[in-house]
Length: 374
Ligand SMILES: *Cc1c(COP(=O)(O)O)cnc(C)c1O
Image (tube, rainbow, N blue to C red):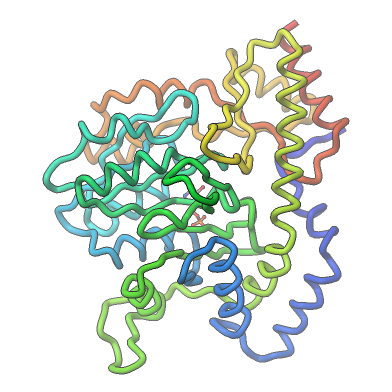
């Protein structure tokens, strides 16, 4: 039995009829970019995440880039960020002319350690980008307290955590990730929890002025009243993606529940075994959405090869922290001491967790890991 890391084709088959119908409607409509589906998707996601504004853009990377620009982050500024993330998060900081300040992660959550931020601040620090890795929330209460104390902007990278609920801060009702910072950035890359069939992204905010600037930046700085008043980009969401995402948005809570059930089954099977594994930690302040089910395990690379031979696909997110990547070594980041991120990159392994995975397949993955260690 072959077990892929993700099976987008089998997911498509569960929504095929509806997807094909809306795709055909868009094709028939003659309206292909920033049309009625984008507008409605923006409203639906704003409702879902309980924010005032949601603005569709071309990718998650662009959501981050336009967010930084709309908040005025640029030349000479520093931005606090985790080294243990997809490179897009740091790349855009550098590209707008600012410098990433890499701060180490917490051992348990794999996320930016709020306790280490204060020491990394300088008079140039302008913003923090908490990345909610694998679907696990950053401890946002602490991040927001620090941001408030020092007057910093907060840009949540929610690319891997669409739908994760946070309940730890300021009491009250649970909040969706992306609704607590100044802006939240979503990615609709196909492998994310809410993924389209191409690229796409979205910026969430409650700030009218930030929303206005993002809307201009995504269309070459066009201001509806007075021509081009900003230097902008081509960063638009297309109607086909928006129409498909509207179908998938209606399924995403169900899929998250199934991801969580799959995670519980893995947890249970591992906990009753003697495999020297550390299962993912679920923070008491949030409901994990398991974009990835990531374990820590010894002999990681040999185990991965063994599983591959057995037809089980796994992945390492991420094999090298960003400060050790060539591009950031060249920018002088390699002498940073970030032991937690470095250790995580040697120990992590992400197992298949997608909603269409069957119980028997999860049992097989665990059994093969047991076989490897016996
Ligand atoms: C996927 C991802 C991005 C980038 O999103 P794209 O839509 O691929 O541009 C940014 N940050 C994180 C943490 C991601 O996982």
